[in-house]
Length: 295
Length: 279
Ligand SMILES: [Zn+2]
Ligand SMILES: [Zn+2]
Image 1: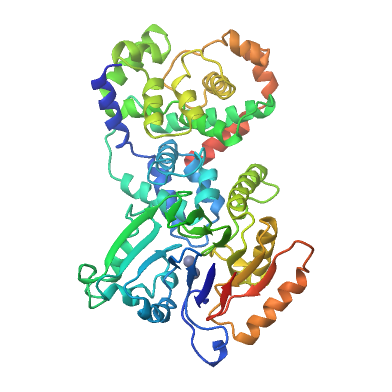
Image 2 (image 1 turned 180 degrees about the horizontal axis):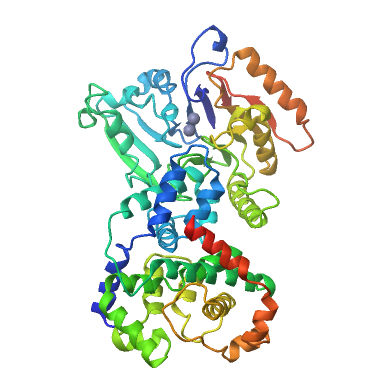
């Protein structure tokens, strides 16, 4: 299995000399399972350089899995070049919105309205199909199995576990570990806590034992204090989750747009020092644009 | 119940409006980005219509969640605060349309009866260590008479007649309903809960609360229901306080008097409900 990062930034692209090493594009991950399928996780701005790398393979069949519909995860979608070339096939998967009750097709339909983009959805040349997913509904592509996992974010967000040929990876999308809305002296505290534990266990059970976990580690614990409820995790929360799930390698992503490369390395180092690696613990890395994991 | 009546009843509930105060509270709270999640949860949890609709939605085929969601808090942990907040807001918005006044049915008193039954049922379960998810018990108490709100709204005249006849004959309301309407509020509530794919235990509890069928959840609700009436917490529309049947006496090993002693002072339960309705 091969995984390549095309965008590792959260919220908004952040080009410039301070982010040149880790990269400024927003979330996009290319996954190539051993059966040769092309799976793309999220369509942040990183999908544009990725799509240029695909020219030699045309015509292609691409499977784009959207974790959730926030801007930084869909921003690059209209610039996915294979859309404009006949004979390409693009399948888009993601969650339907419970408020508007609209399916995953709504992303492109909305982005490609004439006021916002010069080409309409019906004018795209590729063969495009949409599939709205529900929790735990497994998608099979060739020999690859993709399992959506309901995470916790201000909008419904699916993490995806990908399995092929005995190799496995998991991407959280954007995720904040659920926290108790009650205080310990509230009567409801204990019961709510047990619901949280049940929920966490449900997630851990699916992630269990993956080779690679890619996770939203936007904040340090100090930063998190002011950002509770924003829907993102910390380095520390992910190290704990990866440890609980028996993950082999953890890649931290969704880097804060204002964090320079030097700062990023510094806060990551500090996180590793706070969480010294015990036997059986995952190895931890920073996700970096252009980095390929091959195993 | 014949098919036609059943169909008619199904159609009714989709049009059930929540209590206007909760709609207003939800709109105010959700307009404040810093609102405490537990405040929002409290408002939703205390409105039987919004609770019912929210549970209907999250348990529907649209979400197809891997497990069935049994309470507002459960939905919050599972789907996240913002999603639940926006679901509640959209329920509240759609439902804030003007509705028909029903003279026989005082919504405030009904809400009071539902809320106190819910919290007394929870209290009973705690006191007697009855195994069941704590919020399930609250939700079951809150929704046990949901069918009455439906009948009052959509079979207004027949429901009014049932209330009157029950009063005249000093008989339980569900008996009068069956005679006048052809179905009682428990059946109606159960039918809807089932159609809305609420958790099975909850459906059974609503449907069976006048059938003399014993279950841990149902028995807590039965006891709480009688106590609420006995203590005049709100109004259920039924003039009769039913004495404890054999299976209740057996489970709790006491009658109504003993139960009132065992539960102690209930004024805080009623005050909480009162404060909620009047805030
Ligand atoms: Zn994001
Ligand atoms: Zn997001």
